[in-house]
Length: 144
Length: 361
Image 1 (tube, chains in turn green, purple):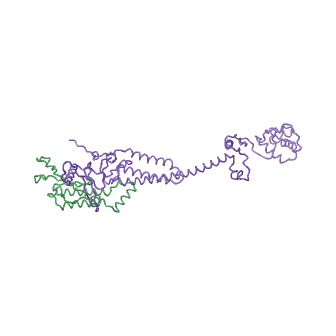
Image 2: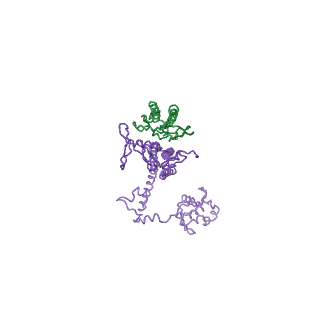
Image 3: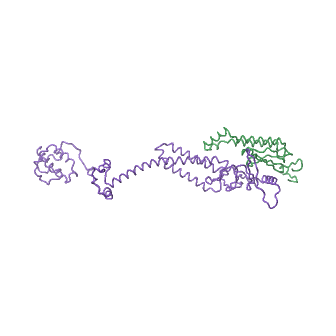
């Protein structure tokens, strides 16, 4: 919330506030985030855009946690090797997390950064929340 | 300000201990875990050292091999359970905590001064059931369903099962399967060892009972001064039979006789020297002297036969005595008393051989 604009402020926009999108436990303990549009983002972002982002995230997490033939096979194979196979092999979940990280970076570059927002990867918050940092909107001249 | 690169584990709150630069995560109290390790490794080592050689030789070498594989699996599961993150939920950072508190205050409304604020609960509907999410004051988060705060580790753990001192860690979402596989494989291992110990024990048991049984039987015979042969034939048992005449009718006396009685010497002179035997030359010892006189000189070897007949009879005398006994049984009556003190051995035989020798030569 800097009143005077120093060189540092021009380079690094001040953080106005943060919004935390909570987990949606409606379908159990699987990783899902609420698609309810936070009011704080009203001026910055389209509701549809936000929902799209969150929905894609949810789909990616659902795929990571999917129970099926592939995950069972991975689990059984790992068990037979006393889980030593994970020393050389990446788990399906880890692969998906990398994919999610790339997606968030992509979204930030294309959509959120131009709007003075920053998505934080939920893994950095223990998969509890999607943290969206709202930066001070210098172009308007007043922080919100 | 000098900023140095620090690993995140160094900054984690909570009462965990970390090893191998954050790769290993355990509870603070590790004593019982070391005990678990010691018990498992100790008993298995004893099994491998003492039982496996016997089992490999007498049954099959695959038995110890499978035991080793199972043992390694148990160890792997134990270490995986103990060393891994059980599913710890990181605490809320300042902004998130504030955000949540604001939400709570908004939900609760104005609390009159002096009254305790209502418990921080969030209601969630899961599969048409209302689940209450509790707020954790330490971690400043609303705990996800099935999560719980471990007071020993001072962490909220997702899908918290329990804190296990035996593995020195919490058991939660991330390490529950390893914990289960650990208990399952350890059960199999203990049953496996127990079974083969029992096999060995049974073999020893039957051997033991055979030997103990045999000892008992012979103790019985000892006390009655009987032989196995007599017992089998029933020589002294039964009403129509004679009582054992050799028994002292006293258990102690019977035992003492057999166990502490005199040591009987051997009557076989096994190590006595003998000549290579040839049956014909009877007087091969002294052929010339026998022809010269009838005096008992040539019979020196024979008359020197010992007083006790069976002891140290020279071997060369024996066949000659036997041969002469066969040849001329008749002259026995004619024998006048021998000039020398007749040996108790076979005085007549000695004299008759000398007579025979006279006759032949």
